[in-house]
Image 1 (tube, rainbow, N blue to C red):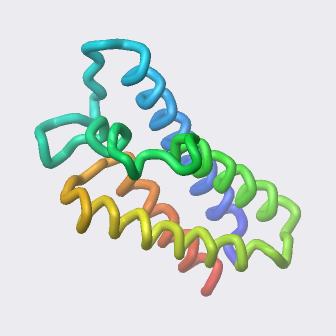
Image 2: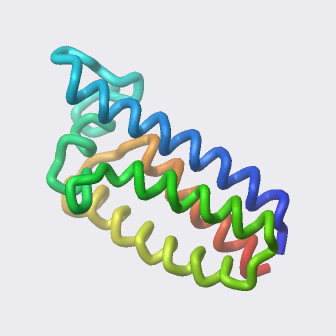
Length: 128
C-alpha cells in the first residue's frame, strides 16, 4: 500500500470536509451567505447541503466524512490491516452519495465531487 499518499489524501479530504461543514454552518446562521462553490443552479454546494440528502440522522454528511478521513489517516499511520475494509465501506458510501448528487438531485457540488475523486484514488492506492 502507498501509505504516505493515502495519508496526504486523507488530510486533503479532511480539510475539504471541514470546509463543507463550515459552509453548512454559515448557511444555517447567515441569511444571505453564498458559498464560493456556488456558481449557478447546476454547480451549487448550498443546494446539496440544504437538501434532504445533506445530512444523516440529523448530522451533516461532512461531519461523517471528517471522521472517515481521520480514521483513514490513523489506520494508515498504524498500518492497520483493517484499512482496506474501511476504504471499501467508504467507497460504497461514496457511490451512493454520488448517485444522490448526480442522479437524484441533478447537481454538481465541487467539494463533494473532489472528495469522491479522493476516495477513488485512495481505493486504487489500497488495491495496487
